[in-house]
Length: 140
Figure 1 (cartoon, rainbow, N blue to C red):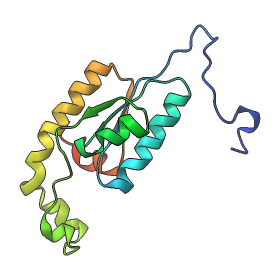
Figure 2 (tube, rainbow, N blue to C red):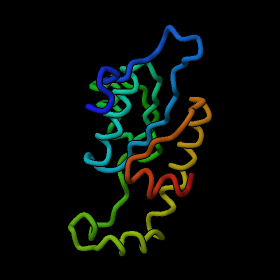
Figure 3 (cartoon, helix red, strand yellow):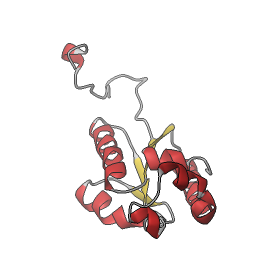
């Protein structure tokens, strides 16, 4: 902020004929800690005149639309598929990645939903939270 001085916060330049709103696709996947940064980013972009679309788990739809006031597209999953061992803290990260076989197929429809959302939204770029990046984008 200090480096930007009076230019902070950046404002949309609506009066400029070359300015146009960006249309980002925000892939906010995962647990609450994974999703919230994506929602905050989407809200900040919207507040600056851009047109973000949030793709996330169906479990977050009411909050994304109702609380954050953001456009939402379901990713095809209600929640993240995880094994009981993972949920109980009995696995290591390398085991989770090595175990893609049991949940990897669940991400294929997610990748399709992301692709369809990106095309329909005519997005300029995709921003993904950590889980969206490591799991969903690798099959999109």
